[in-house]
Length: 261
Image (cartoon, rainbow, N blue to C red):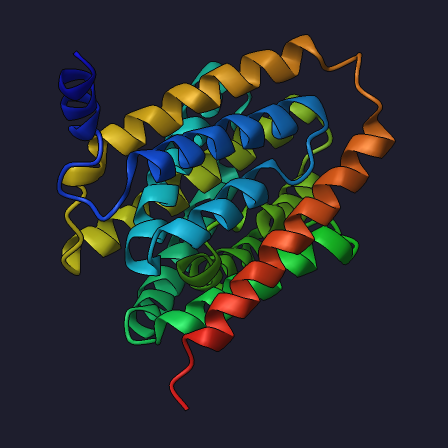
């Protein structure tokens, strides 16, 4: 019976380089990341991609992370669709298209260790450096935002923290900010997925992992919402910061170890 169970569970990682332990760890990271985002709103997405970067190669990490982010942002945008403000979508989409093409063309030619190092530095930046602010924005600023973050997302995966200040500055109502930000990020992640698909990434073998990540994310969000008002937020934020710092340090070590000298 145990052998049969092991064989059945083995279908979850068939065709990939993952072990069942790694599969479970990634799902746990997705659950924890969603829990963090839902409960304190800080570091959940960065935590998820930082753990994924320790297990998945960049060529797989970025498309898989993009699928997860496109799904979660798309669902959020669907729920809040009456509040989406499409007047900023076109300039952002045009800029994103240019940025993804330029960034993707460069990303696929970089060494794995360099991509790991870039991601580690991004994790440290978002963890310890105060977020920048933007003045009230117009179409040209959203074009520039789309171009810059579209380029960056091909290396760092999650560019939502870079887009957020522009959306926050453009709209006064919280519902409009959340709905519009989710819409912009859905488009950006979908475009990234399309680019990687056109350059040869085949995600069929990773569908079980994707399903596991999405289900874990839903569970984490539900738990986080339930515990939203019961956590010691200051303590929890400090714990997350140091966990992210440790993960970034581990990525730096992997990058240095993988350097070809």
